[in-house]
Amino acid sequence: MTQTHDDLTELESQFADHLEISPETADLLFREARTANSFSDEPVTDEQVRAIFELVKWGPTAMNNQPLRVVLVRSPEARGRLVEHMGGNNKPKTSTAPLVAILAADDDFHDELPTVFPIFPGAREMLAADDDNRRSTADLNAALQAAYFIIGVRAAGLAAGPMTGFDADAVTREFFPDGKHRAFMVVNIGRPGPDAWFDRLPRLGYDEVVTAV
Picture 1: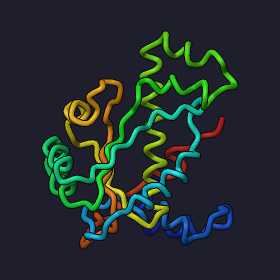
Picture 2: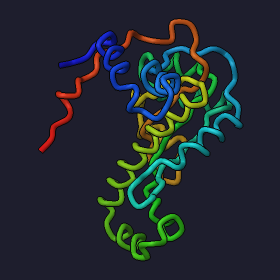
Picture 3: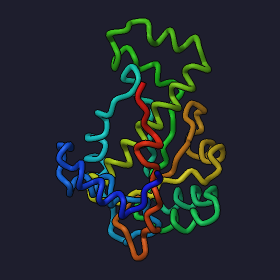
């Protein structure tokens, strides 16, 4: 059955001994963390972002490919260009967040495979000859890396506000004019501000998701 927050609290206590991380870490990364809708004015430093990257770069991907590319939007001029393409309520959130990251998939990620996946010498050529497969591989693995990125933001004690409500084609043209990168997510980053959270929504239960054969 679908689980409410009270149900989850009981289940978390029941199964906590089967996790290797502390309850506090589980809360920080998953149970108490959620999408932030407002932020304080405390800056997010380059050192914090570097610490996030140096952690999440180890997340697994297919053939160790690494298609995620990140643009940190720091200047007021760049922020204005981005906000213009954000949708609805995402405009004010993106205008006021201490830091905004644009996440994109690099369709030429295969050029790095000889370095990052040397155990398969033909990997680059295989993907170079198949545009559809290369693009779908970039999409899947960049999305995986984006999920790691969000968890990394939480691990740094910050809040993330990931959004897909924006004109992705326009943002791609604006910030990735080489035509080889495709924007797919915008993430607001910072310390949570007043009324940052919506109420926790239900989650599907184990028996609704997991089967054994």
